[in-house]
Length: 351
Image (cartoon, rainbow, N blue to C red):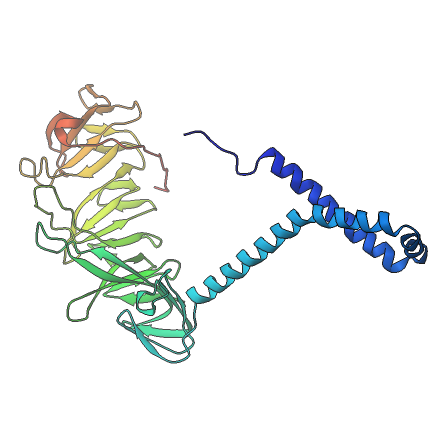
């Protein structure tokens, strides 16, 4: 494909000359309006004056036409914007919700009310039992659907003014609270930014963590028992483990099913193994779960090595499978352990 400039040099030169002609025409008319001598000169040189006026008018045409086109396009855009953002003059039921009069909608290009993308309310409005300032409509795949099937659920992304409690979770108002609706009008929290006061699995979850409903599914149709995923953005002490950047996986009863994507926040010793800060860590994955149930996987990264009490080093590229009581189950290459090494960042929280 050969690149073509949007405006050619010739066009730009013509436009510049036309702009100067417009400026000259305006100045001339201004002088004629305020100067008697200029009007007298016009009267004495009518042929030259009218000829010059015609030339300036012709030269001004490209610029004037461009201004006209911009004006037309601007009006069309304003009309399109108004058509896409109507305000309800009376209550209406849209996308399964009862919306009050005064609601400002955002519509797609089809301008169909029932295809509204977003609704902003004139005052806090109860949406699925939550006082909301606005709602955005979307869909998500049902991760609880039978294997091999694809089921979409309607999702309502609510913008709220203050902390709200939904399905036992305390959600902050800094991000949207996402709700899905199943058949039979069953409300289901899909995700939110967690506020202070959430305690699950014996852990006080740091505020600002991201909560989402998530079930790990595999290509062979199997799925894990986790139902919730919490991305923790602050240091977290998980039992004896000082972690940073950890993702917690919880089951339906909100008990800890596992964790992943974590790094050791500081140097850590377990049994006869000593690990440097930054070591990648996760609970045992599907690859090793049957062989070593309940184990943790320690993976040295960034050129740092783990050290055994007898002086043996475990270098980058290897993973140590170790039980919480310190028992070493195996030392495996990362690929055999099913471990993917990601970029790590060292964090040194207060001990």
